[in-house]
Length: 113
Image (cartoon, rainbow, N blue to C red):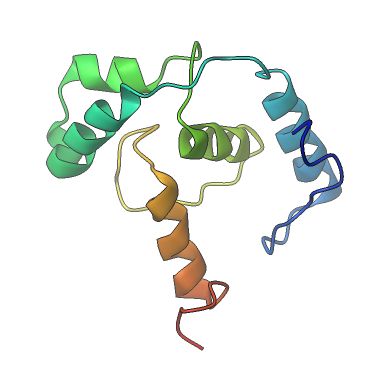
C-alpha cells in the first residue's frame, strides 16, 4: 500500500461503510508475512471442495499470514461481501479466482462483453 498511496480500484458497488471496513481490516494486517505455503493448501481445498481435510481448513483460516488473494477475499468477507459462492472453503482463493469473477461481470479486458 505504501508504494501506491492513491490507488483505489473496484467496480463492486460497495457502501461507504463497506469501503471503510475493508480498508480498516486490511490495514490492520499490514506487515503480516506472505504465505507461500498457502498455495498447497488452496490447491488441496479447491480439488476436494466440501471434503477438504479439517487441518487444511484450519490452515486456510489462520490470521497470521496471507497469500495476496486470501487477504483481499478476507477483507471483503469481513465487510460482508461474499465474492465466491461456489462452495469453496474459506481462504481457498488465488489471484486467478478474482479474474474469473471479473470476467463473469465483463470487467476484465479479455472477458465477455
